[in-house]
Length: 396
Image 1 (tube, one colour):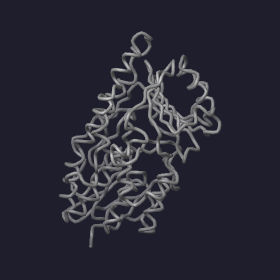
Image 2 (spheres, helix red, strand yellow; image 1 turned 120 degrees about the vertical axis):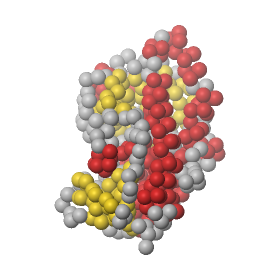
Image 3 (cartoon, one colour; image 1 turned 90 degrees about the horizontal axis):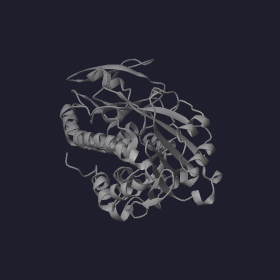
Image 4 (cartoon, helix red, strand yellow; image 1 turned 180 degrees about the horizontal axis):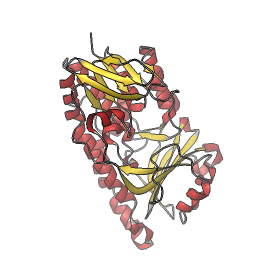
């Protein structure tokens, strides 16, 4: 009998781990604190390092119905809208990296994963099941879940996000600190925008004290808007806090008229504070480990939060399948994943300085700044090591 793996958290990372383990013949139990399985209405870039894992799990048919395969990705100057295209981030991604560059509505991918897990094990996911703690010994893990008797398993994966209960039980409080930046997000029906703004393109607007990323999701029906701005008066780290359109417009005062048009078309803007966490020196103890935001939360400037959780899931499943000693398998998983995840955390933080630079306020210097920092060789060096990664084949 293969180990029974307990997973705290039914987000994208936790469900990908469950599916990867089920594919290898494991029994899994996933515990989700909310009473209804759904993801918040936000988009994300599924870059080639993430999409190759999902296609490898047999999800291609379902993905192709809802994901957007980008035609292009570009950089735009905050006040003039001048455009620079990025090679390898659109229709040529599959040829260059062997896997497509996709844009998802998180809820769409989440539904695909839920359905795939339940097809393989109908009772795998328990909702309204808040993990409150656990104990472990050499024989197994005993998980405490509010409203349930204590649950016995052979291994525990903490995929329960930035406020992870599993992480706190293992290592205590985290080291989160406010970045001085907040993020705005919202969805826009694509039909509500002018035809010139309806392409299957990701546009990254960069400015002196903020940035905006806009891209299509849900088979091109919606545009996802994410605006990041330097502000120190909002420190709520939650993706469900509603904001006001006028407030968002004020934060992007002086930006191009297309940014203001999109903000006005957002049906309901949300805002959240960005916190930075230093890379963790350890993820695992005994039969318990962490995955995704629980151990390597990163600011969103490289778009690798969900992708790195998907990578974790694949490598973790391989390690558990390859080593009958659960604790030993988790040590191998951490050794294989922690160096890369640490570098992604560091590079994501550095990217924020690159796309928020006061020099962009100076018209005389802005063009040279962009052409230097987004020259083809710079883009290649910044992204190839991310997109080329193959979690199904990396050494474990």
